[in-house]
View 1 (cartoon, rainbow, N blue to C red):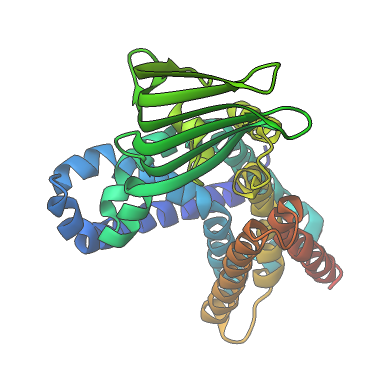
View 2 (cartoon, rainbow, N blue to C red):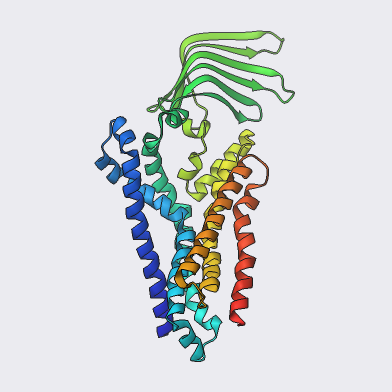
Length: 364
């Protein structure tokens, strides 16, 4: 690899590494200070969280904002090179702007591939560890929404439904359980009601108590059975049977695709939480390359105002990118636009802008 390529890639990765280290220290210190009362109020110590929560939380945070960190890093070190007339010297030596840009493409592609593999396979593992404890950093109201009692109404298949009046996700126990099964003509053919339902982790089944089972017979009469307890096997764990929006974060991509297929077979139409998670795992790494090209185009020419002006422009565009991404995610979850379009729209908008500015800079 030529000297100039090694020099720029070293600056690229070195600046990004410094940014990551600086961000990690600052964010963890600020977050620990703000959340320590909640952590200790829930019976944990800050030291325990520093070992069992924050390493996994930082993986999530870094990967989520990797494209923005790369963008600001490229703006920073390229602006310094431009101000020191290094870029002018390289191009004056006979190298074209396209040749000068080659190590940027190489470095951004390496980071994008790393982020892609992490998003699809490593980050879900980190999210499993993170999500176990993250709820204890929330306010009491937000914690209650996740660990507290909720009303369940879910579809097992196109003809089977479950209703639980008061279900506690943490204890995996609920009251006023009702299971209904219909035939192809939407006629009720089977119904089971119970006072209580809970998940038996050893049996990997649900157990209902004080139940009443009704089943339609051929002569339009009903067969009634009741009892104290009965095991029910729905073929899924409580987390998969009654999924929340965080479940998709903890699944590798093959597992997430399987979960989406299962939910579609069940007739669940509210899949946008999972589809957003699936599509952003690829769109975010691609944005690393897009934003690297954009940052190079904006900062590779010496400007009045120097580094400060370039950083101001870069941070503004980074804010617009992150804000638009989060807004589109919410819009998609409300079924206004498709998740595929929502997760790729920032790249669709920024990629032509990056290409235009790149070729404009190359032709100067």
